[in-house]
Image: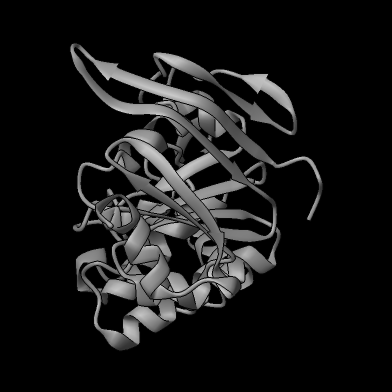
Length: 252
């Protein structure tokens, strides 16, 4: 891993009126690692990530990419800088097939007799290629509506849409296994490992410490809007992380 983090957030504070959702939070993420963010509801996990992905702007604090300060006025601007997210809802159009979802809003076109039409064949080919080359996933059919796919397959389509961008360097995954059974969870965790091994920085938000300890390299713990610890997964334990989440040391 490089000495300079791929992404660094320093002193991030976010206020909504009189409510402070985040207070002076630092975060670093490096290429080729999975950074897990954990904490109870209200700990500030989602707010922190929405700032990183341009949905919110920080009240105070700075964001750096490769050591250079940046700012995002929108999610589109964060994507331009190589940062995207796959949220728990996946934002898929269930009635459309996987290829249509993959290129939703960014459809590939071609001209026939001077008329611009959708290039459905190329979109299908590209969807099949990205799923296989980047994720090692092959769908039995690209003709079926996305709603007919399993939870893990739907997750793969949403991830493929994000990684189709050649400039993607950081992928945020928000509770990717929340609605999945054991087998689908295992497949999704494998996808996360695959992306990490391809050099992406993967930021994983999860309530499942089992998942976190299986795939993460480091764990960033939030509590009541503050960063209360960052541990190396291999050197830590579920008990230690739970203690940080609930504030066991403060209570002792």
